[in-house]
Length: 126
Image (cartoon, rainbow, N blue to C red; front, side, top):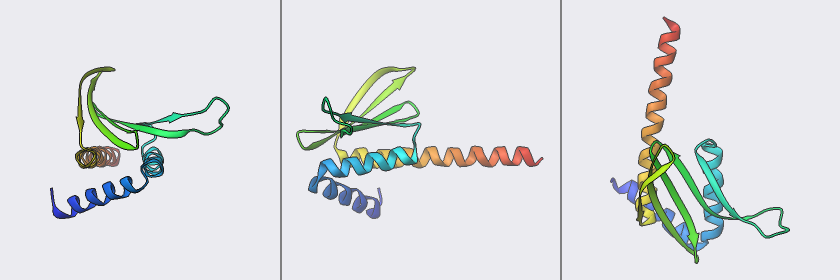
């Protein structure tokens, strides 16, 4: 991991620890906007409440489900291997590592999508 990546991850952790609830909400909404089909936001609502409090987020990328939850004011991060809807294993990890792995996997998925798009454009042009 480069020094810039490490600094970025450390900055995220400092940001989250300052106000974990609002930062998790902002992060969840940003991801949902960027990847609506892949992101699920967990909310906790009161009986008569119209809006809820965001308590977690999960991102489905390939065979991995990235889960980030707020429990007791602390972030809990995990990655589960899911095949055909069945969870085969779940690994709990430090949020910094979770962010780094999510960044890496989204970059890989993006590169694949760009390659697929270029191939499709090339096919349509021929």
